[in-house]
Length: 191
Image 1: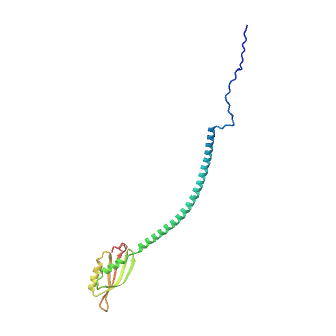
Image 2: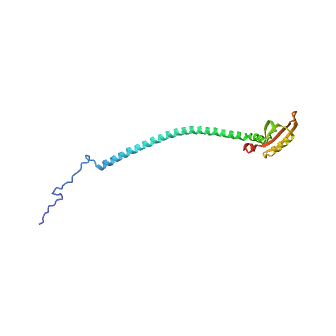
Image 3: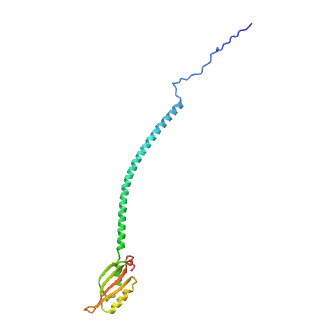
């Protein structure tokens, strides 16, 4: 006889079920933290973007103001420098044409003898020289000879001529004096 085995694939004892979670009622803590960080980063990046745009706009306005001030200041500065440059150029031109004639007077004062008198001094410009013309009186012809030697000793005087020597009614010797002085000696004041 064959024995019949009763076998069933369905368990007879009940298994304990694992506790189940309710899906909608609880929020994961890590998810909540990550959500807060994500939202904060989005808000922060939008804030930084808007701040950057505000700074760029402010920078543009400041640059426009600076350029306006700079161009106005540069225009004023350029005008001042051009004006100063013109003045310097004009003064240089005037100084080139200016001659100090005081050394001529000092020379005549130093070298003219006590008895000799000069009258009517005339200065005229010729090429590299200043021509000096004068008339004068001396008591005697010997005084004129001594005066001629005294004038001729200066190396800065050239072309010294005593001419038109005559006797006046008072017995004085009247003469004309002409000589040349180099312009370089009058501009550098080395007479």
